[in-house]
Image 1 (cartoon, rainbow, N blue to C red):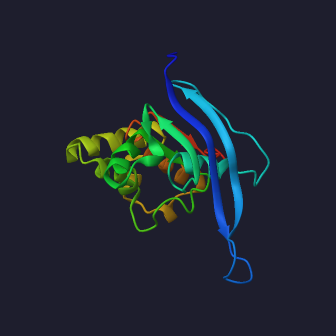
Image 2 (image 1 turned 60 degrees about the vertical axis):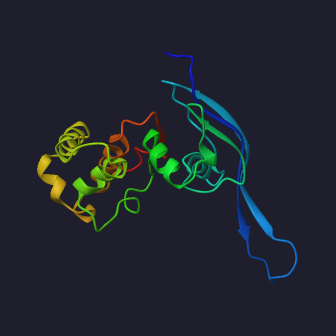
Length: 187
């Protein structure tokens, strides 16, 4: 195992504005994550454990830039991930993928399974269509789905099969970091 630090999170904080009675005065905030810090070395696994509602998912979403952090630092392989904008963030997302807890709400119901798994590859724009097809075929086999299931829509799958689609989608770009939010709860 390498000693190289892949992810360094320092004093990460996430807060959400809370609407209070009047529109005058100071804003109130709900502090969902307050000063969390950790390191993950390349090849390591880290589990964040806590009570329901303690901010585990919110912290993970903030690391992946799926919710905004209001303070802190997220360094991914030497890149200040929180400071990336538009195009740089789009390209960096190939390094970080997320497996969501809820396979029912995390898959686009209008896309076929093949399109869902292929979507991260399309956003990179670095592979030929033939290579994308070969990658999708391989990923379907690796997660235990049949090739003919690629043409189906999410509602045609069981919860466990939907989660397998989400796992295949997360693996598509061969990311450096995969963030899992209870990935086997639906299997």
